Image (cartoon, rainbow, N blue to C red; front, side, top):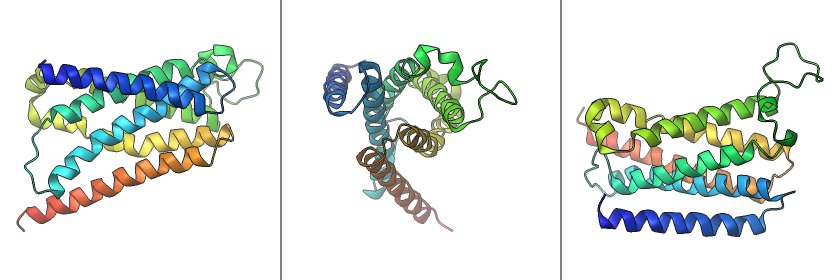
Length: 213
């Protein structure tokens, strides 16, 4: 890894820590773990959005888009790291830290099947799937994985970010509704997602217009 990338990672790390701590002070949370969970989720979303915007911006500026862009890769790495932290910490916030009951109904709660199918359980499963995808993308974010898979297969895995673009806001919105935390939080999240989606759609139209009929 070159010096420039090392410096960039240090900068991303400092920004993540400072922003997470700042958001923890602003978030109306019941305890520290909840504040960290919410804050890391939003900072992860910011990095994720930044990574998604790079490709469409290249297209809109009529610049050749490489298969792998280090800036996009590094933003994705930090988004995944923060998503994992968010998941680990988030599983300690409710139910006394008994994370099994995030996915399986407690024995004293009436249910048809053990697997939670209420909004709380379903959004936890969705969040878990998103985290697993993030971890896979994190593992693949290196030149060795690109060389082993080849450009086509590697890029195909990277396109799973489109699923994340749809799934992450659903997961976040359900939690905000359950915790009665709608308002500024919801508007901020939706604004970020709408900007990303708008750039992605613009990039797709730009790409299709470049392809001869």
